[in-house]
Image 1 (cartoon, rainbow, N blue to C red):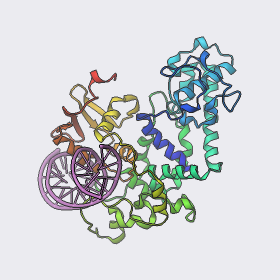
Image 2 (spheres, rainbow, N blue to C red):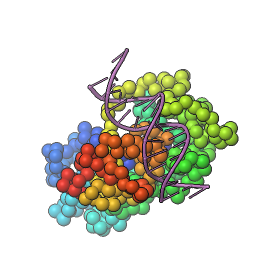
Image 3 (tube, rainbow, N blue to C red):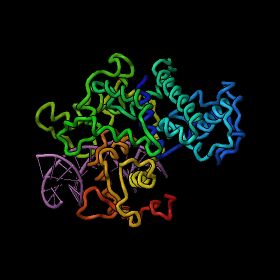
Image 4 (cartoon, chains in turn brown, red, green):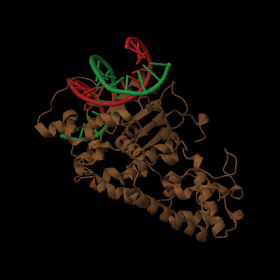
Length: 381
DNA sequence: TGTCGTTTTCCTGGTT
DNA sequence: AAACCAGGAAAACGAC
């Protein structure tokens, strides 16, 4: 079950861009919503745990801003720290952000004593939940949910290619970082770790994972491994049938298939059973151009993925094209997304004037007159 | 259930 | 040669 951590990491990367704060029901705050409560407004005795807040019941990665405040408040109170010395701006962050902070960063923000204490507590919580996830017996519905997340987030983890990734899962919470780092750092690591072998012109991270890792992640006889896929391309059985690269490796000669997008779910059986349990009507997500825009206008969350070439004119450049594509694929639950496909979708925006062509410059695009929300006057960034 | 819009996938050919 | 660009064709898929 440690694999769910990896899903969390990737989901958190998206959650960073599209936060939903789903756990507000866990809060035990007395402060009104809409602003961070002052520490003096917080209570710690109204939940399951009489001394700690609801943060104690949740993986730090999943903490909301309120959970973080609650957690800080607990330690302020417990250590008899003078709360008036605290800069409340430092307390306004979610768990994902918090988890990227190094000990030094925490100490600089909260002082050596409280900072060290917070760091220690945070590491303890991280370790605890990393352990909990692997040891907890989950209910059937939780298993379904977990499986759902795993399939959607990293379907290629099922089958023969997962071993080393689990190490990443365990290590991730301790990634050394400072304030400037964030979840995208996770993606930044891959190009160096992987050994693309694809003959495809655009080596996606997905392909890299598939081609460079061996070993088994799940017991082949377990329901998880059988159900591994709403996306059958990534089960060992079906991969050859629908993935161009694999076909080429398998036969030594590319097999032609019909034009257009192949069906995502081509199998019956348990895969179909799992699939049928999922909602048929996922809420409409943001469009690709909005996704790109959101990466660009959140520089603190755009860790070297893209950059503005000309902020005023809306000209931007992909720095890590495949990483952006993977992130987009992650958002769309499509782990086979590549920059090639993403860029095709981008080119369709020319006609609709959401994007404008930038001739002669690779990986450079420009927002068009029908795009919104990126201009300096439209954002606070 | 059908239609529509937006991708997604594949492809060929061209450019850097 | 690899990486990227351009755009046609066709299909998937969610929304309405």
